[in-house]
Image (cartoon, rainbow, N blue to C red; front, side, top):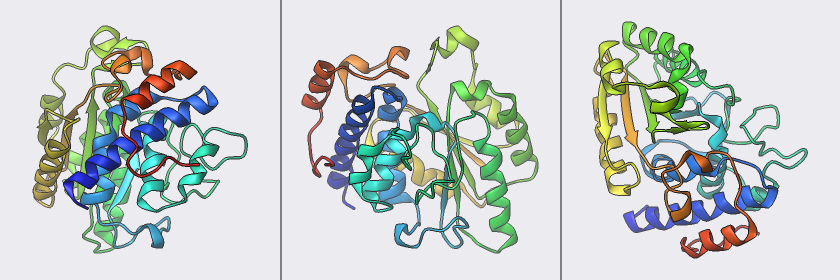
Length: 282
């Protein structure tokens, strides 16, 4: 996919996000909007995967695990846009008996989803297990995970970080969405995370930072650099600096849009700032 097509896809994904959350007046638009470039770049350019051949094992494919499962709107939109299921299913988001629950689950059998993720702190442990399984199976593909920075306040994360560094799980790339916001305020106010990169480095990880996490070219360059560092006896951590609510001016840079839905008039304002490029789902 060309760079222009990636950017156009990101715009359409943002439209999907605000429409999905508005339709049921429930969901998490802020972090979803902030991680759009990352997930679009990952699924449309960086990962080796096959939507048409999805199974739970993912043998001979790269794997992705969304640990901060509350940003399911962006995850579902990207999965549908890249071909895992029809975009029309996006209109069932958070509805009774939908496969697109507020936090991803597995028992509905939604293609592209391999773990239930809503309880924060667990995704890195799962990613490590999958990465070790690939090593045992002589599968040279990579495992990617995504985490919120507020999620790093969970103790299980640091047990997993210590394990991966100690065991040189070097086919794992863990990305931290460093937007500085969580449900109750800024991460500095709730529980300061200090220097995240230094912490991962101290546990034996290779660490790089993407300063402009809402710039598609910066994300592509940074994640390609991360891929180049894999396989060198260290797990790789990417500190992705994003802005919560990016793309919709009144949602940007504040925790207040972590988990609330736009009104009718706010939806109109948001859609007015986001170009329809691939066609809205019906």
